[in-house]
Length: 282
Image (cartoon, rainbow, N blue to C red; front, top):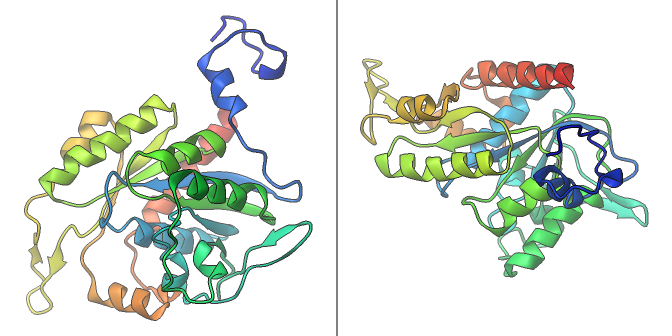
């Protein structure tokens, strides 16, 4: 970046990384208003990324912020299922209107466009990436304080498109206790660093299961390595979520908004502080 950067890339002749990043950004719908965008990512599938996205959205809504979820996991969309949402997406020539959950969380997902939610979406990467962009550019997001993007796992085409096309404030990385996952998390962390996107912290899912009789915490997948990863990259450990049968049952029934645990309450509060800190620094 030039020493006397004005942060106005349209009038700058320098070829710096900031200009390249800004040139790829897609503009939101002209009627949209979204204050903060947080991407929830993971280096691999099956670690509970969509669950964490849903829980963070519920907790943020409970804090009094208007919340939305952009389900960018096109081939494996599970967000509508967690909320029991089956309302179709409405729209006209002006744009698409995302349906809202019982508590008022706006959701855009490809599953809300299918007549049969079990029908597979068999698209190639560029088409999937284009659909994600349209969820951002063609959807009218009304007065959203916090949008969470449920990213597909890995560091491939779609996560890259999201990082380059949507103005993300920061990311939350989801992990599980297995030692193999530690390496995969490092890939996601390194990708965020390469894209110059702040990492707000780590969430470990399936950390343990609590014995219903004695209350002992049983490490089903062995000892966690999340503290080592957090220390390695200098990230906060936002939460460790246990394997909770009650939570699983709520998701299966589409009642995630009825959860009564506090697993991610403090994590949501941390996200508010971090984004407000970024606002103050601008």
